[in-house]
Amino acid sequence: MKLEHRFTVPAPVPAVWEALLDPERVAPCLPGATLTGVDGRRFTGTVKVRLGPVTLLYRGAGEFTSVDERVHAAVLKASGKDTRGNGTASATVSVALTPVAAGTDVSVVTDLAVTGRPAQLGRGLIGEAGGKVVAEFAEHLATRLAPAEAEEVTTQESRPHLRAVPDEPLDLIDAAGVPVLKRALPVVAGVVALALLVRGLRGRHR
Image (cartoon, rainbow, N blue to C red; front, side, top):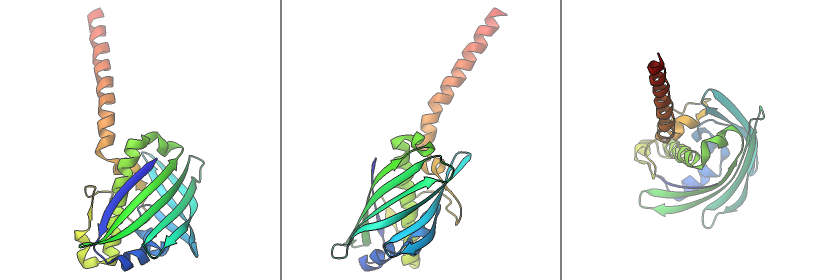
């Protein structure tokens, strides 16, 4: 599936570009991620994901396959597998930076493939969760690059409430937010209606 996001960081393009190409600076900004090794443009790491009562630990690697200093654009490919065999994830991420009055506009286009339990959320909910995660990442990055202006970072998504804490897993249900409830409510309502109907029929037969 293809996911597209944009956000603005209150810092100049050179500073944002340098940070985005440095896994050691980027990893702490991503909820659930831990960097385990860096070798040139290649890196390894883990990502903890919580899906309801289940916590998944993805272990994998990534590499910058294209870096264009002239236009400040890069392509990153990464893949990982849950350590318990509950699924896989792979992504090709294209990033482009553009100077704007407020600092740097960052365009992120992700071609994502997910198997296993997270895939059960569906494209819509994964898209919602992805938007919130990108917004959270943008705020953390802004804080690192411009602490005094961190509150000014803007995104196309509403401000998230992921409660991202170091070593805490990324909660996909929490990240997806209201849409999950919207999908669940009709099911719950149907079950309740069915239960009331059965109860009423039983009462008639007594």
